[in-house]
Length: 123
Image (tube, rainbow, N blue to C red):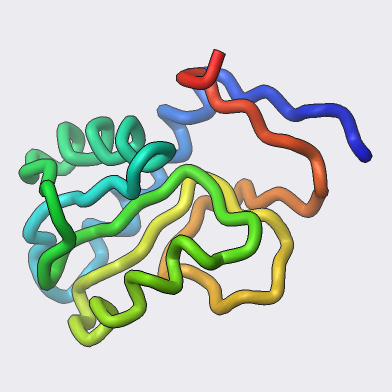
């Protein structure tokens, strides 16, 4: 097993900025941001502030569903029914190499490793 990979707040801010830039290219307006409990809550708050959109208590049409990381993809699978809207995106701060269907957006900083990823809010 590889040693753990610790991410800084600065890296998280940069990754969320990347998601914000992508969201601005969508054909329809984003209705809000939903953070997958637990890991997606903090990135969702950061993104909602940047987009000046509400932080949602539940996914809704044309919202962004965001999580911190996907290992197996099982968490994001439950949100597949929301992909009917072309403006909705699922976003990840990080994605490990796995065989599940990709989210509609993830930062270019995907991880190709089996290392445990430690986010700054987990310390």
